[in-house]
Image 1 (cartoon, rainbow, N blue to C red):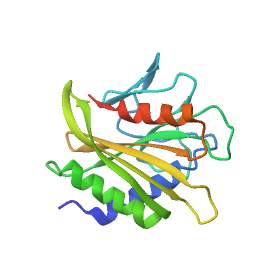
Image 2: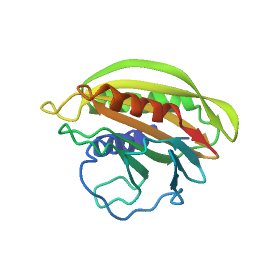
Image 3: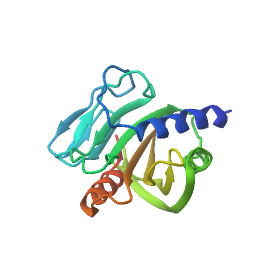
Image 4: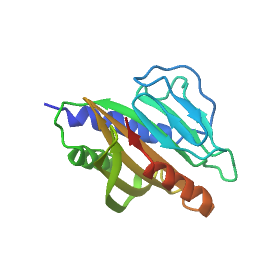
Length: 194
C-alpha cells in the first residue's frame, strides 16, 4: 500500500525548499533530465509546460534541494525579497492510486507545515495526458515558511504517467505585480503529461 506518511514528509520538504529558489544551483538526477526550451515551451519526454520567455530555467540543483525536483523556473525580475517561481517534482506511486486522493494528502501536508495556512480554493482542472483530456486538480493555498516570512500563494496541480505522479507548483508573494502572478497561473494551467 502507498505510504502517505513518507510522501507527506518528502512533499513538505520540497515545498519549503522550492520556495527558497533564490540562489544558484548545481547537480541532480531525475526521471526527465532530457528537458529543453523551445520558444515558450519547456518540454521533457514526460511532460511539457508553457513558460514565460524571460524567466530562468534551472535543471541542475545543488545540495539541500530535493532529489525529486526535475526543473525550476523563476522570475528574472528581482523586485521583492521573494522571487516568483515554479517547479516540477515527481514521486513514484502505486498504479491505480486516485490522483484526487493524492492531491488531498499533499494539501494536508502543506496545511501542517506552513504557518498561517489558508486554503484559497480547489478546482477540477482538465490537462492533456498522452494527447487526450485528463482530469486533475488545482489546489490554491497560502502560507508562510516561518512566522516571520512573507505570505506566499501556491498553485499546485498534478499529472500521472505509468506509476509516476508529476507535481507542478507555482508560488508568488501576494504583493507581486499582477503580470507576474498571471504568468505563474498560466504556466500551471498549461501543464501537459506526454
